[in-house]
Length: 393
Image (cartoon, rainbow, N blue to C red; front, side, top):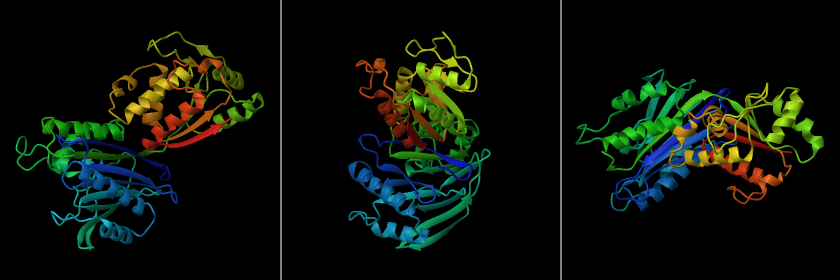
């Protein structure tokens, strides 16, 4: 998401109440198509289990959609609270919620209903957020606003986080001051929002002694500078389009990745620079990288990108492959770091030329492999909050 030169990196993870299959918390992200802003909501369904899950999903989607529709905040919240169903057993709304709206100019607007307070960490310290409380539809709603800066980290939490450790490590739970003291040092290092959420939720699990007594969700939003990365895979269908494709690719700002042997040779010829291959196998299954002056990274094509696709899928699921791609020096790991951690906007330049070697039934993707691979990868990258454009030649 562009905010002049600012970008919101969003990461969230949940723990599920022990004994339940579904989490009663839900995070939803909605893009504002009018101003390119983003709305993130976290809903906490009453209780746990299936009913809590269904209501939190509905509430989070409702909140994000309405707030992203550019309605005045008061009207939006009124529509939300009037729509929330009420439990016949408890006589209260089925779901509490928080939502943060990051505008293109870096302004942050937030609404909160009965969730733990929104936290802003800046330069390793908690910064108070100005707020007011209004009664809407008989409910006390907290409104707040501030101006985002590069490096800011916003945290939205469900109460399963603040309840962690009650009766074991703390008398009254893990309060906000303790949470900030724990996570603030990590906010100052080069951690993605997803990694910050993982670190914080790992401590929540420890405080529950790995037996969560409540659903617990952490949503981290890290504000950074917009960074564009461009990746080319495959030569164009028509040789006559090479000049157009390459000129457009290298006119893009940001870093440039070139994938594929034939593509690399074409790029080297276009730049009038030598293609310098290496024989260093950092991963026995991933072909070595090469070098071309003027290109940030040169790799093999489909095999390398298929591994990147695996990493992208894992990044959104259990995150187990992070230790591998975050430090390894093979081409797939290098691409993963550039796309997952550095880039905020990614342009794919995909050549339609068909390479018979790609029609290998042992590869994880069949038929028109390059297009399928990029389309699948784009879905995962968009789920990470990246802005994606694909150009076919």
